[in-house]
Length: 329
Image 1 (cartoon, rainbow, N blue to C red):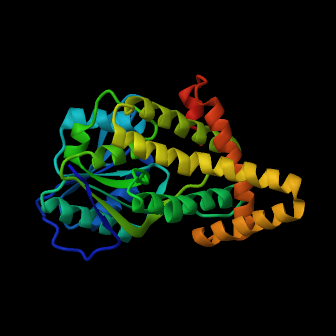
Image 2: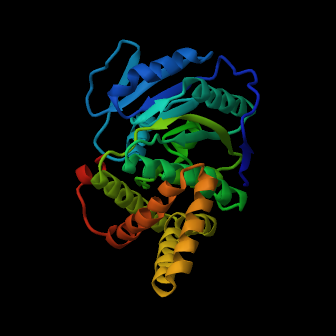
């Protein structure tokens, strides 16, 4: 019951015209972008918008009315109502796609599906800089995509995938546990696919698009709290699965514990040995920035701020909070 993985851009093979692709998003505002992506594909494809409003923005776009909730809950509602076949391409509302790269990911996923495998495929996501907050968010994205996620997968404990854009077999979505609901739909789907018999996870090195950066600090705080609540919900649900618990533990250490420990250690070193501490902090910022392809000054600012957000989320995740706050940008 092992899960195969495939890395890097692969040559486009013959994508079957019989394979149906559903391009799905949870907002009406993306229909033009998704329709353009659909028109570039050589096979049958349909654009589906999961919206709280029933009206369709265009005659060739299907709108499925869903209740407010997590993306995972909305997708599950659509799958239950329509029982789709083929592949489902899920795109977040704040994504600006590189249509050429995105179509490569879709076509390669189709090629894998044509070989009889359930498939989960994804590419890299970037976040453009600008203001200080945008630069920090961009560093965070590159640190995750270039360092943490590849390292976890190389060590055999990877599960996280970028949920902003992914291509998933409809059979996988139909088989997910209806009792699971989490803000971390991408982590759950990664965990679930790894345990699904014969499933293949295709990790493409292409950058498929850019995520709209955060513009307010309060939105960033809400995001980290949302992620921590989602992680704890998954940890509780999968506590009886040793393999899932191992991968969740590795994810938690890499994404949350190490940043907090790194900042605490550097601050203590600076207090006790200022010169040595500053030298160590500078070397740490330069090294991590080089690995992430970012400016060292941005790296230093990142390691002074983002671990505090992780610590705050870890301390406050259990507090009841309205969904309007957790989902704000």
